[in-house]
Length: 426
Image (cartoon, rainbow, N blue to C red; front, side, top):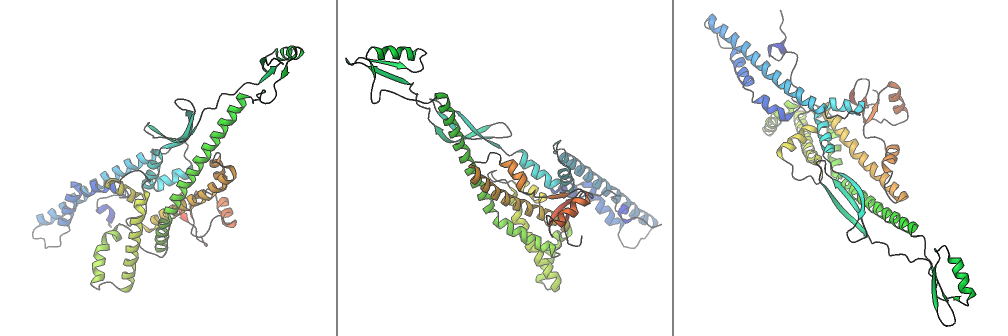
């Protein structure tokens, strides 16, 4: 009777994915795995068997070793399942099918994206009275943990008291009497003065003012528009700086994409054997094809190492070793399969491209409106999403026919719940 080799290894039909690097150390240091590996090595010895008991002992060592390795593997699977469940629990109740599918296919990458979004401060414009009169306006930044800080952009002085409408009457003796035009009896009093020989004072005797309520409302509205325009200018400047800083990142992503499309291999074993193969290359043990593959893998490693620290949020302070390992597991790296790396690189390229498109749309909207009020709705209508998703064959065929889906584009296949890269003959 033939035996299933996987079951003989003691891992059954459930094997750890090893996708969470922060959990792998527990598996590597598990005493059951280490002892099981040692016992299986003893059981697999090819030395001659001198006695039946010695043969039985080897068989026992192999069986016990396989059992211990299986228990270590089961423990790692349990840890990974718990981590995946915790990550999936981060999904909001209103998450779309595409978002749930992305989180299920790439839990580590989703955890990084969700964590950054949850702990980003929120910014909002504020207008409030200043001590001693006047109005302050600017931007209020609120931390998800409660504290907030304000950045004052400007100050609007309190409006000067507005003079009431007044008309002054004088007579030949230069006696003067002033009447307020908002007095209900103004016309009666004015007629009496005119009948008594008074006349309206020439020159600056009449003070004319506008309605104070309307004037105050217009001034506040003007100051608010100035504040929102200044905030829009700062937002555009910040986004321009970010897009400019991503020029090198785009170059490294393109290098990684080209190498992966060209057949450069990645994976856990490839990553572990690179130092050994590098020594073999220096000693002349590799043929031309193997040396070329190693060179491409080293260039790809350098590109990945450049990309990983760029995942840190600007202004978030120093990056710890734990965060660096988390960033590495959340993006493309040499330990992933080539297919997973292609998806991750394509998704990052799409996000960088959409950020550039958002900047162009923002500049156009601000030029036409002098602020960014209502820009979110405008962006939803004019800027396509970073990741395309097609839930039916009809949607997919229409996207291909109208040129929305181009060769090399990453898209989500709703029928198979997988991320795929469009090829002309697919």
